[in-house]
Length: 223
Image 1 (cartoon, rainbow, N blue to C red):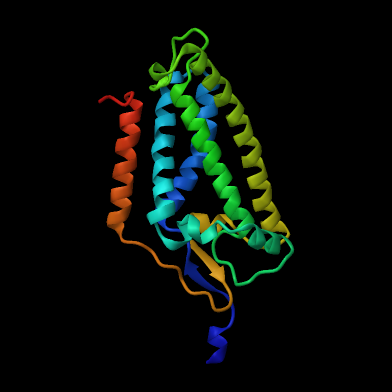
Image 2 (tube, one colour; image 1 turned 45 degrees about the horizontal axis):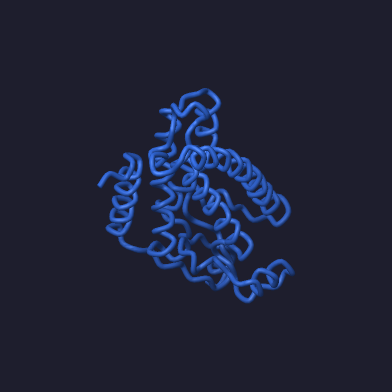
């Protein structure tokens, strides 16, 4: 009977909200680039507002969501990052490792900067503008347009590094990071407990709040 306990077992890791937000980001980035290149600015802005709602929800979920999604579970101090980089682990890892955790923070930070700049930006003719451009001067809106493009370029670089890291873990370390983000479950070995998850009402509350705030911002924050 002891042989039945040998080998890896599948535990629940990423909940549905995390996976929806993650793959929505994956789809939205090229869609936002294409709509900008094609001059489809109405659609570009709509997708940007959706991105804002997803970002707000992910920030909420990083504080009030399931255990693996919370920032406190994967944002580590410099000692933990250095120890992991040197190949030393204090305990088995289930979710993001210390370096991967900071890459998530960097991606979310750049997305937040990109969205914020887009909300205040306007084109050189002053025809197309973000919903909050009315709160700033033309020069400030023009500066926001510059940063909107620059931050997107930085996002592309960071996404490329992120994809390269995923390939490295898959091909070199034999650690599949993609399948758990699709199925929500990960094969693990050793004494690793399944993380805690939160009730569905918290998902609904967070999604409703994020959606309402994003809608309010998309209309120019009317009083």
